[in-house]
Image (cartoon, rainbow, N blue to C red; front, side):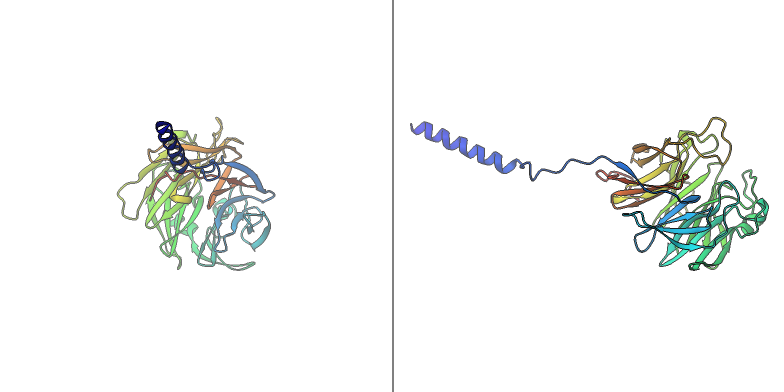
Length: 335
């Protein structure tokens, strides 16, 4: 009987110990939710670039309408932030991208110069009011006076992305294959020149620049890369490759680095053509230089923003798609 009592005590102690060290269903970590996409906004006119403003809202350029719209990231409500910019006169161009320094907005305007039949300035416009602007930098004039080393057809270039950097801006020119440095007093210099790699989207961490490359036509997956470099770097560092026609790069939660692929390029496509519809993807940059697909089937995306655990993708159809649950454990590239 004494042995049975000891055995019972041992069994009860073991059960209590297991209960202590085994988490209950209520306290166990919740399952990781899969990324899911939903349409937030439609009806934008010639949307290409975007940024997150100081108020936490999305700001999107509309090249056809010559304006910048403010979009509530939760409700999708659209209001006009600024209008009266030079409208688009080609398949691409006009108000191309937007960025803030403090509470002041600046807009990158391209493909509106006299070299393609336009009458406006190719450059950076400061937003002074709802319908008033000041040109702070004439990038078109710089391009005419300083042509690139790579072949080109548009003398004033095709500027794509605008990113704040050291109290000024960096600007990619996907046609002239270079990144420009622009100060707030209008000085334009060549920050870095490339071979025919078609630089597109930008992100910055400290002094380090992260850049997406679409690669030359026909924009093969192996030429879609994310690279990094600094102001004095003798060469670029490849962070990841393997997705066709990369158009943007952004940091997310946990300093995870994401890239936006516009998708498969048409067999008969020429320079400046978009990817095939519904072939784009949002990818995560892994430490080993590969990409992990977060979500695919995106329709000709052009710009990416990440707020907390949600990505916002602008596309050529005039839509913004909201992609929830983009981040898993933070294992992306740390700057």
